[in-house]
Image 1 (cartoon, rainbow, N blue to C red):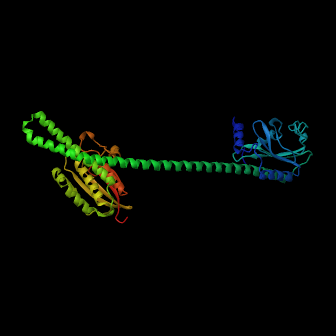
Image 2 (cartoon, helix red, strand yellow):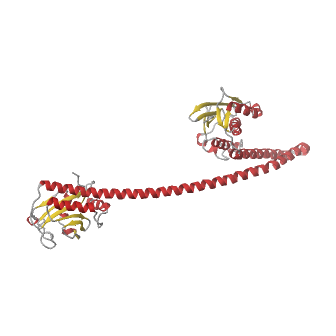
Image 3 (cartoon, rainbow, N blue to C red):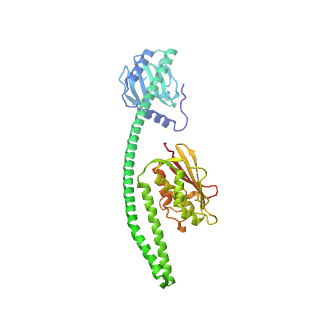
Length: 426
């Protein structure tokens, strides 16, 4: 048996909310409800029965048997007297009951009910919604078996209400889900268009960068050449200030040339033809060592590779550029108190291999490790050591290979770069 929810000052408000949640008031009863009320009349062996719902001010006869139903004032309702008690009311002769005898359905003002029985409709949450009512204009009594069947029928009615409510909720959820799916599809389409527009803008921007960089190479080289000739031919005629200016202009031009080269490298990393083959990284490291020989000798740097490196799937030119950038960075950002040592190692990893480039340099603070891959991002801009493009270029190359790149700390406190690259044949 369900427990009635009766406590609290707002119990009636909660009961009414539960009733309105079913949305059956003033709605036409379906065939199932009509059939249950007819069965109730047969069980009680009476000519009249009604399914009554009690709202704020009225008794709504949702469906009836044996008479034309309708609404009546709640204060006139026989069912309103005790339906919230949650028990069956059984009156063989309502005239003999002190509470019901003066009701207008009994004393002739609305009807002349003699026999009356009602089973409360109790929701699963314990709220009384109304009654399943059977009555007659002659006195009679129900057996305990009939009363139990009347209770069963009341539970069936609530079950039908609940099924209708769940069907409505499911339909509303389905509609909301469909609306959400459409919204997601629209968002995906907008995102696809935005990505395509971004790719187009990036292509245009990178094409512009390539064109501008190429256009800058020759005038920069000319300016640098003229400054060199100026210093060579007229250096002894310049005073200290003039010599300082010429020297400063030369350094500025050199930095500008480095920046242009870095921009060209970045653009090529994104737009150079990608030719994936099996690449032996041991051979690539040998090429990188040769490329950086002057740099390593001038700084006293050491590049160590314990054992051999794996064969990966990728573009040999881009992978050479990738490792050269990483090792060059490791030497460039060396610790002032010791000669740079760069160690390149590897380990198998799911779907490929993990390449590690570790150094004993200055390291990268944890709060800077995400942004160092952004274009022009620098850990220490005041040092003017680089241009903030090298690691952006490295990320581009790794992403073109379908890999991942991350920054950590090496055993010596320097920088550790981890590269996940696909294995050859993967």
